[in-house]
Image 1 (tube, rainbow, N blue to C red):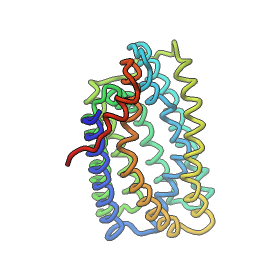
Image 2 (cartoon, rainbow, N blue to C red):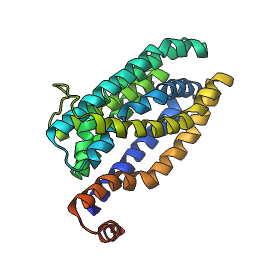
Image 3 (tube, rainbow, N blue to C red):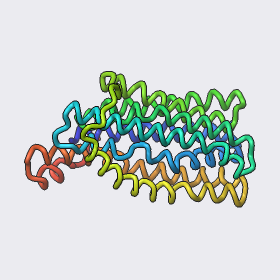
Image 4 (cartoon, one colour):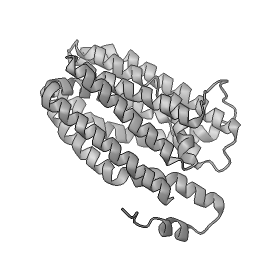
Length: 288
């Protein structure tokens, strides 16, 4: 578990460094607060429903005691069906949302961000299988690779003067890289043939997870949507810069370890070993 935690820390700190450096460069030279605000409104509007895409499938894959190939295929099918449904809903809502904010420039940004979520379900299960086997080296490659893709696309397009669309295509590139690297590390996993037999445990966990995800998503994204409607894009951009940095710092502290806990506890449970010695005894400070 200490090795997994070490790789998780590498992933968290490397991704943070890339994202922080990218945001500084973009904010200082290429992206105005108004352009960032336009992207933030689009991202918040899409994410408030797209946050449901996981539907608890990753947690099911990590926590299921006897994960047979049939159960894995069922989980993959549910992930794809549910996630693509959410993505199509986000695409269909792009025009109404742009009209609600009275900003035609918002529409293409919404469409690009929403389209990126069509790629998400093809990486959820492959990445979850890497986490299940405690292969956090692969998980680090996925997270760092997707952060690099985001940075490269966003900076390149911002330099070319594409403004908010540069950030949107950066988000698209991030999901594309996550799909490619996770599929590579998991050994090319596809959801076909689709399988729904034995879906009840996944759906039960997904229902609970969706309630929690909805509450979190609304509280996390509502401020940007309200500020964009009541004030202007510049105010949203300034708020997004401040709140985004605070969120990154919080995830920097807690994100790495919490990401390892769930599959680690599942392994301890399945082994039948005492919880106290394995969980608390293993999490000693990592020399460095």
